[in-house]
Every structure is written in C-alpha cells, then in structure tokens.
Image (cartoon, rainbow, N blue to C red; front, side):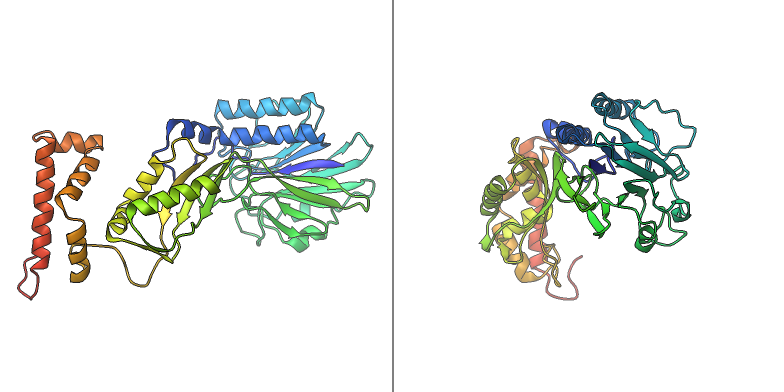
Length: 408
C-alpha cells in the first residue's frame, strides 16, 4: 500500500516580507502554491498511490477566490481520472460549515465537523479505515479525542487525520496529546497545522509533513509532502518528498577580513551564484561575525543601499536577497551625527565628499516621489549642491562641539 500525506496547501496565500520584486519573479511567487499542488498530483500519478490525504488548510482563508477553487478542482479531477481517492479536511484557515456547498469530483470525501470514519479497499484488496474531522469555525477548543474510535478490528490499517497541535483543552487549535493518539492503536496519524515537518512518534508514525510551500521568512527549507509505504512487517514508513518551487533560505556566506562596499557585493554575488541553484531561493543573508566592513560599506549597509544593489544584481538568477543582516553586538555600530567624535571624524573624511554626496543625490532622485517634491523648484545640480551644503554644515557643527555651551 502507498499513499500521500499532505497538509497546509494554503492556496491563495499572500507571501509576506517581499518588496521590489522583478515582474517575472513576482509572477513565479504568486503561482508557487498552485505549482506545488500540481507537483503533488504529478507525484501521486507517477507513484500510482492508492489514495491521497489532505489534512486541513487547503486554502488560506474561509472565503476562497474563484481561481484557487478552480485550480484545486483541476488537480482533483486529474486524480479522479486515475481513480485515486482523496480524503480531505478543512482546518482553522479554511473552516467550513457542514452545509457548505462543495461539488467535489466523485473520488473526493470531505470530512464534516464531527469525527467520522470512511473505508476504502485498495487494488491489492487491502482494507483501510480513515478517521478525521474538519473545522466548522476558526477556533476548535474542545478535545476531539473522545470522538475517535479505537482501531477497527476488520481493517488492515487505520489512519487518523487531525489538524491541530499538542496542548490542553481550551487551546485554540484542536489540542491533543501524543499519548491520547497512541491509545487508539492506529497505524498512522496524519497531522496538519504545524508548518514545520516533524515526527511526534516513530512507531506508529505520528507525522506533520509541514506545509506545501513556504510563505514567509520563518518558513525556511524544503517543503512538500510525505510518501507513505507499507512494509512486509505491517509498518507504515513515511519518506519526505520536496515539492516547493520557491524556497526561503537562511544563509551565511564565507567572509573574512575587512571588506569595502564593492568587494562585499562582489563576494556575495559570486557565492550566491555558486550556492543557490534551482528551485528559486528567497535568501535571508546573515553576515558572519568575522566580516568587518569599511566605513563606506558600513554606511551603505545601515541605509539599506547594499541590499538594494545586491537585489539589482540578481538579473533573473535563481536567488533573491530578502534581507542582509549582521550579528547583533553589545555596542551599537550605527553611525549618527551625535556619535563618538573619532567615528564621526572617520566617516566625515571618507564619506562626506563632494563625489559621495553627488552619488547620494542621484540615488535619491531615482525615487519618483522625491523627484517630484525636490526638483519642483530647482535643477538636479542645485539639489546636489543643497545636499552638499547641509551635510557639510552639519559635519562642521558636530566637530566643533566641545563644551556645555554647544549649539543643539
């Protein structure tokens, strides 16, 4: 016997923490949840599985878009054409009242809000009982364990489907304990709700497959489903299968010594090109503690200019830098006008030059709203001169501070 266990598809999901994406990458990201679902069905067909379990949160919200519903129906019809049954439940995100009007294909069984058991017989004449429930509202605080029956005596295998998390009665998401599940003597527990793949018990397996597609920066690594196969000794063995087309990744480059702005950009770009291959990686970059930055690189990092330049260097590659971070320290390294005199002196000598200010002014004028506001009554050259004068005056003023009567 062989089946697929998946959960938390979150079709129609809003990806979070992304700005300034190129149009082509934006389209790939918007299509990613549906692409992962299509890959799941491809896997089911290729492996000739006996059935598919979808354990809650198929959609990201209780009211779904027509596009998401249509995309799900297309994939369910593909499984129907191959005579592969689908057992599904609704979770806390896509909760549905019992009278919801769904017109699923004939191969689909959707659980209602009360625990129930369906049985099916595989092509090899293996009898499988599958027990589960759906959410009828966003929160489900009562324990559902009492509604689950003990394993059926005439079933070869019994599988429980549960969208929730460990906890105690009163918690919001169908709380349960591992011991409570084990008391039912089922052969496999197919869980949903937690977006990180994890195993709560090995024998029998009590498994979270994680979500099908990472949606934000804390949902890192490969995402997909579990392909579960029976063994000669009547065990069920899950194996993870990666399906996501977009992967969020935390990554630390190999960097040492002091780096200038241009050197840092070059090394980051080279290492990303070598490290980040298909599928597309959304990368949260953490600079190592061994990496020191020159004054110009420090200023560019703190202002976000380094990240902006790195994003501009992607040019259709398989990676996109989401954030560029440095290890926190006990003392702030941020530069300010009223900071230590030695630090400001170094910055003033190296950064506040006519050439650097001209570059800064040009970058500011790349922003349409600033262009409209600042150039309404002056030319670009006049604007550059205004910035130079203001910064130079402020620099000279801070250098002269040496007593209680200093100007503010």
